[in-house]
Amino acid sequence: MTTFFIADIHLCAQEPAITAGFLRFLREDAPQADALYILGDLFEAWIGDDDPQPLHAEIAAALNALHQQGVPCFFIHGNRDFLVGRRFARDSLMQILPDTKVLELYGRRVLILHGDTLCTDDTGYQNFRKKVRNPLIQKIFLALPLKWRLAIAARMRADSKASNSGKSLEIMDVNPQAVINAMQENGVEWMIHGHTHRPAMHDVPLKGKTGHRAVLGAWHTEGSMITVSADGVELVTFPF
Ligand code: OKV
Ligand code: MN
Image 1 (cartoon, rainbow, N blue to C red):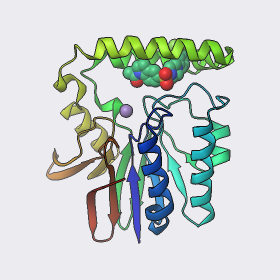
Image 2 (image 1 turned 180 degrees about the horizontal axis):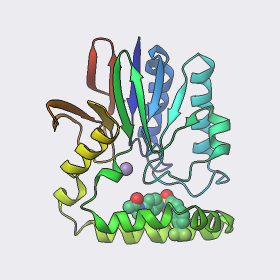
Image 3 (image 1 turned 135 degrees about the vertical axis):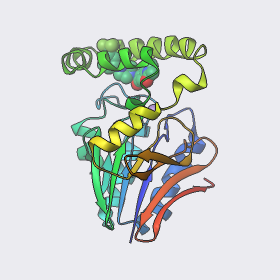
């Protein structure tokens, strides 16, 4: 009786070792879980469900196969794959959740989210987010020909790489008050998120008690997950 959480796999055609590691995880590890939650940035980029990349169909098929084995899969959008939509959800059988969600797991209330909304000190990113998360702007972008979307996205990634190189590590991490606010608004003592690529377990000072923040690692050279069971919450790394 264990629920698995992962995030920041950042799948892309240029990183076949990560893809192979993720497919092995879905085949060999994930079938043991009660449910699998993917907390964003499953893909390095996403410009619409109509992108004909073979990688996308391969991942949809593998997630679909996990569902057929009785393991439901849930997905929260990340800052990179926020355009993953209904068609990919249908093909993969994963259920797309809202950006924040409170789970009741083995008697524990757990807030789950990608984590980018907690990085409130990065005002440049939060301004970018407001624009690309606007439903009207998304509708217009998705109506463009695939070739235009590919070109726009490549340009945006190149620009972002250039601007991030000037940002400090503190700006890119979560804001401690944003963490406290999110936990108190949702009445939880546990939070699980990814995004920062800083896997760790943190204590959070809440009114009268200590909360806990579990942070997932990115899948660079090994896998990272958080398991939740009646016994507790654990951060686990494993080779591809
Ligand atoms: C994802 C990020 C590129 C960060 C563009 C409207 C707009 C969506 C989009 C294009 C880019 C996602 C979808 C990508 C995340 C970047 C660069 C920085 C910090 C529009 C809606 F504005 F053009 F109309 N995009 N892609 N970045 O390449 O996957 O998260 S992406
Ligand atoms: Mn992210």
